[in-house]
Length: 194
Ligand SMILES: [Zn+2]
Image 1 (spheres, rainbow, N blue to C red):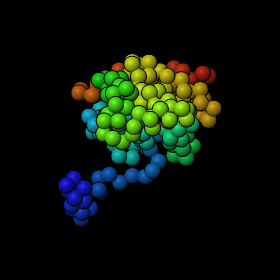
Image 2 (image 1 turned 120 degrees about the vertical axis):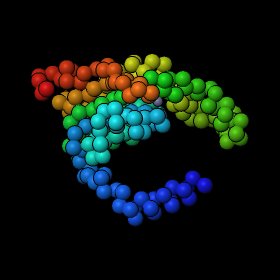
Image 3 (image 1 turned 90 degrees about the horizontal axis):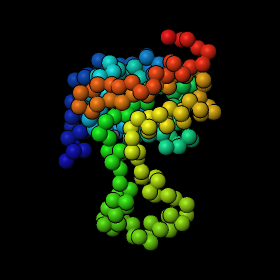
Image 4 (image 1 turned 30 degrees about the vertical axis):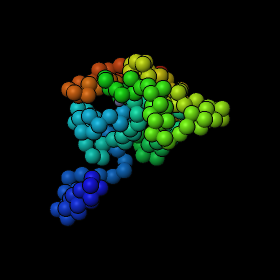
């Protein structure tokens, strides 16, 4: 059982004080926020490829690294990190070969019905209630466009200060290579911070 395995490992981890190299504070040392995908290949690769260590950054993960709502939980995290945790720049990092670029809302809804979780009637009543399940489950077709859309949303957000740089990058999930899409410093008007 995975849970049992995790709990046993954890007992040993704490007992052996393996946490000692990871001590830090809640304030990110590099004053940065990373918004990226939940992809399992990025768990260790992304921080290593960016030279981010424990205590360096606030990292927000979600399917596709997509900010789907201006007042949803991702923006809430960003606003909190900027005002309460001294974050000064934001890195929106998509990746090649993302599951959300091949998202198939129709197929997901079919699986929900196949598993007997919801009937077609329940799904249509949700649609009638104004919940667009297809839109909700849809990811994106192009990772670069998705990142640019996220950057526009953050930069134009009424609660985000104009001096916060918002960068866009794409990471390769096999090599960790970063491609720069948007250099946020260049978008800052009246600031030549760097
Ligand atoms: Zn992904």
